Image (cartoon, rainbow, N blue to C red; front, side, top):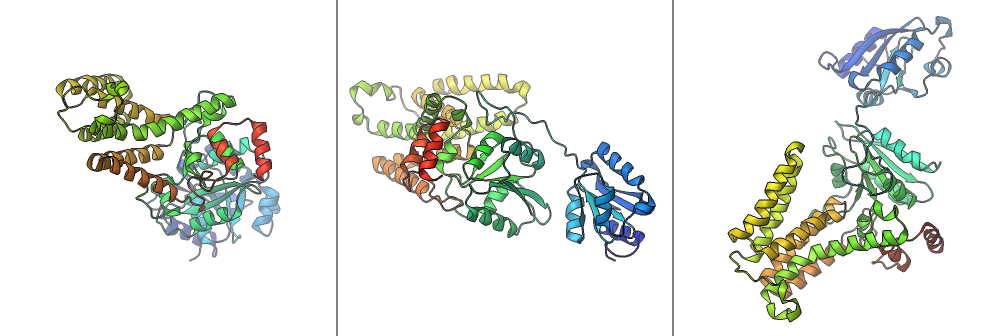
Length: 477
């Protein structure tokens, strides 16, 4: 028996069998009356706004029998004061609606099924993200519900050309995905490519939310650690990227958004750069770039100089290790690389009330006792401490681990092959950046490769709004 044919009892029974209501405790079925006709109300209990549903059901109950039109669309237009109400006429649409929390009403005598969005999502308050913090600027951040996230962007861009195309992915999860872009500023081929990719996905569910989506959008090339997407938990950053012609992808149950296309220079950018005057923003940006570059090269270069002390000028001989070396420097560096990540994971899982004393203990053990015991040399501890702190100068965790993996590769090659190994490692890193194509196919090192002088200057220097507008007009962007 179909849910769209037969009397109300048969249709109600068909819906009950379709949704396994005898076993599902969270799906509510309630018999009501609409204009003197029998009706059945279906919804997910945990997603229902009880106050709003009470008002809507009260409105339905007072509809007079003589006011009932011949078709359900007429009932929506004439008697339903709630704005977000529509009809579904296929089983797939009904299942998708009711399981996503939309309330569905089957009314006797009408073939179609009426749906009303009476959802109230369980979510936390809009607060500043723990990772993407700014010294000055807005303090709101995305949450796990997709509709409030869309509203946070719409609040900042009141443009009729701002489009949010809703898609679904996952046979079981039916995860909501919103593809956001500004018509007229975005490359239409990129938008079509994103939507076609999402529609063609053969996956049961997006178990890991955006990470699952990223792996499906850009499969393969797992061996290249440099990130292909930019993520942010800040609505202001997402809005700025939309205005620059990017595509922003929002995934339900995820407090961050995915931005494409992106390049290495886009990933390095930070919101703090734009909340300060141009000269300060430029200083912050150059400091962050320099710190990341030094964090990548400082330990391999130090290892290279240890093995070739004759290369060190007399004025810099103090950088060499003066104490006895009991453990190979490479082994010391690798152990400390693992120890830093171990401390990160420990801090994540440590109860907040114990984080301070455990941090003190870790600092004493790793900072003093390990040197005294002879396992580590103080110079190596110093450089690794700098590397550990430098990883937090930029907010992109994927880029931080890409730099870590590249640094470890440089250390190993330098240890076994000396200067030639260091040069080979640097070439491998350069090739990894050069051939790491973005989702749109644009060079990962754009605007360096392919070269665009004006855009490259904007990546290194924070320009004022008026200057930026002039540069965009001169380049047609």
